[in-house]
Image (tube, rainbow, N blue to C red; front, top):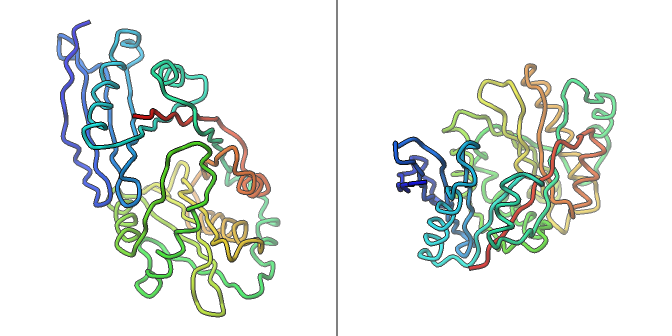
Length: 292
């Protein structure tokens, strides 16, 4: 099969990472596949994230291999030591990555909460249960200025999130980065909702959970992250915040169908929280890593 690999310009400019993109076409200039290579910075300058898509009719013709070779060369040119890629367990992409030298370094379990099936009595009980020394706060969109510094500091709650053998590094967060992340959600037309647990003794944020809702308020929302700082763990804050996030989603978006989340298989604590709130499994993916 005669293939042409054309580099593309990625229109989605991001202040804390950048992407390379390629289009594979056949001899008749018909698209056969694409590849996107995301290059991180801010604590992850060693890492690149790869997404390859090949049209089912064009598989087993070398399209994926050509795109992979092009993307890996770009990762090396940008001084990356690891390339990660994700594929659903047992899928053609899963087998392709394994056959090209990638290691399976992390298993992610995806679950969904149907909002129509939420146990509202249980949700109310969790939210109203006393958590001495803490209170809940929330906002939509960008963090309020008076909370920006403590919110950025609270992001280190994710630093010890189970990532198994992934060469993930540690993301560096500051006020500019949290604002830029919220702006990116806004620019694509979606809604970012954040619930935090505040330490009543000093007003600092002890933990957070983020939820992104589609711009039209229908379909499924996506949890972006839930974390509690190590010094505040053991008080049930994660479940408390997530329950309040669910309540707000039900209240503000009556046409929303459900909420999606993904959790490392080894993150038994967060999996237990999700199970207790009624999330049910949908599928499993593998994160693969190629060491350069």
